[in-house]
Amino acid sequence: MKIPSSFLTILLLFGTILIKAQNGPTPVAVFAQKIAKEKAPQIIDARSAEEFALNHINGAIYLSPNDADYEQKLKSFNSNKSVFVYSIGNGRSAVLAKDLRNRGFQEVYELEGGIGSWVGAGNAIFTNADKPLSKNAYDQLVASNKVVLVDVGSKYCGACKKVKPVLEELRQKYGTSLKIVELNLENDPDLIASLKTVTAFPYLIIYQDGKPVLKKAGIKDLSQELNQVLDKAL
Image (tube, rainbow, N blue to C red):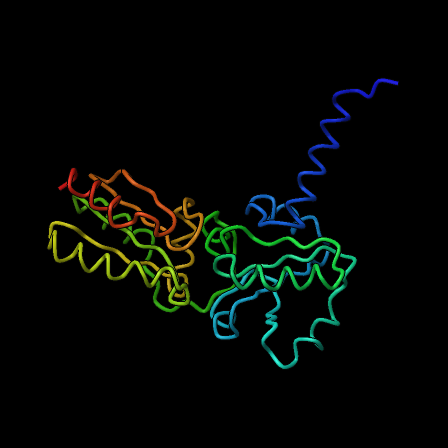
């Protein structure tokens, strides 16, 4: 009997989603959709307790394999239901996700890009942000300066710290002709969400005459790419 091609396509799609859930990070759109379908989603924040206290995805529970009560806390989770895990990048969440799978959890979804991608996609979080930069003030900064470099990250992000020396070099090179704005998850979550462009931390944006001319996630070739764009703009 010949199997309809449409049925094979559905099977292939289902298999791809299942493999991704079990073996690699899940894109933020899929992650959010699956959480929305759960009546009481099991969401785990794999960062530190301090980070969790400052901000986290709504409904998330802090859990770290390094804590003394890890085994006890783990008993409160249902291994037969989906579990959603995130951190800043994929380091701590990957360790936790792997441990959950090894313990028999059936569906473990690890957020690709971490909480940065979640906020960057405009999804809501709980936050204790203090004196954030408003969207109106941000727009004014972009509009009133010929060239603006925006650095988006978190003070708990290891890779984000490697951006700071690069920014200092750019300050020395371009002086006041370059406006640098630094946003972080701890103070500016709503503003970061409103940009609807951040996919991971760190994330860099260069505006020229009010329009973005560079959007870059990560630190690979960062100094080279920033200098190339800024040399042309300035």
